[in-house]
Image 1: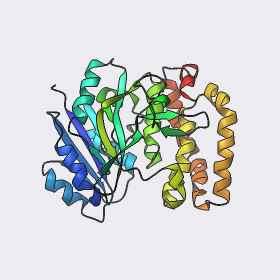
Image 2: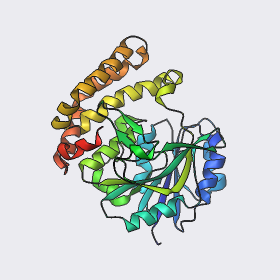
Image 3: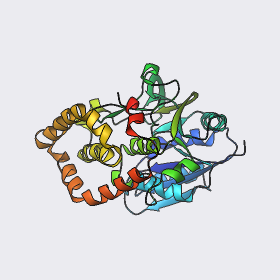
Image 4: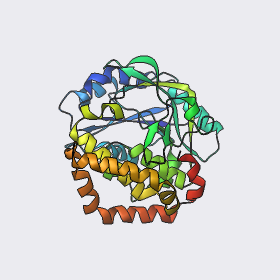
Length: 319
């Protein structure tokens, strides 16, 4: 095939998952794969475990937890591949995962910039597979929420989601270059969570498409889901609230904002009400948005200035 794939692995105290995750990366049948590992100041043996399996892996060791978005950007900036694949530590790629996605890219139109295989839900540190679908991509709603697609009927068109989950995403390098803003592919203000939806939305604004390659199979242990919110850490929930608003403040145009207003405002009241009452640890998210409003607006201006697709054309994706 002659196309290099750079696999980006980001760890933060991820050692228990790594035996199985690294086994999946090592067994890829695609002939040209490089691994870049970024560790966010793990207190466990994540760094050593990666080097045991990939002694020649390019490795960045951060002295502090910089978050997923910043760590991914560090790797992307030095990636030599024609494609960049993200692999979460709690994900396992079956041997032909990358090969099948690269083949699909090579057959597809140039404007397909992101791809995912069929992600099935897995359990435990050994990433034991189940038959439950974890993600076929990302779908958007009129309430400003985004969800992983878990049924084929949720795809608007066959094998084309709005965007792809970052758990096992593959991106064209040309796509990455085109939608990067201020030297950031992933917006580092997101820190973690929803940054993949932000990239998906920006990609759509810039005229790119995403695809599902169902014959490429991966397994993923999903720990962050809406139904588990009360058991998640306060930091995770705070970033989730912050990023919900950040996603729209940057990407949503006037037409979509007006069209979706009844649904978005109703959900916003629920979120803000919860932050004021039962989930006060998420209240700092609102303060963060206010303090950083100028930087957010600067990013918005840059995105809206470069957009190539109108909100009217994107509206059909918000259901």
